[in-house]
Length: 218
Image 1 (cartoon, one colour):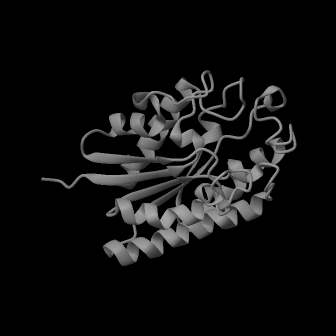
Image 2 (cartoon, rainbow, N blue to C red):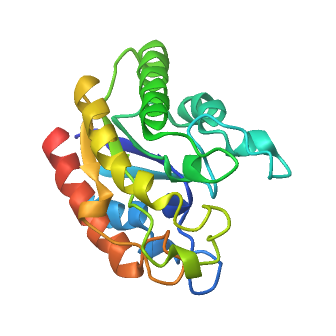
């Protein structure tokens, strides 16, 4: 009997599944990690680990628990909670472009690289093996960001250009680190209401693209 393969999806609100029409959460079966689960079937176990506002390595001074949003501080506890893992998917970077951080794209890519290294080192110790890591470039902000409820958070169009540039920099980082790579912006576009999050169709389309890559890797 084949062992079930465990896949960790570590991300922000697009992995958590914000419903831009209600401000609540997209129903469980419609969020991309769970669409991925449905597509891959029972030989896989997809672990949904998203948090609204999660950054790569930064505490959020605007949050009532700043450390909670720090992707670096949360990563090791998460890995220890869910190992053994056969694959880790990292999709972060958008929140680093908020005004309280506004980090340049090269720094974001370097921070993603830190998370990759931490993941590999931790899992080598915990499970004696290093699984494939996939870096996902998040969708760039949409052109309607100035009319979005997130306008002030991203400084209007200030973050638009770097959000577009981020994919090419993360693609290079993935290549340098021998990671798999997907550019979510080539698969789906953010909704036109908040200009940040997947539509229902986007969750589905993105999940199918990830499923193809997962099958190729595992």
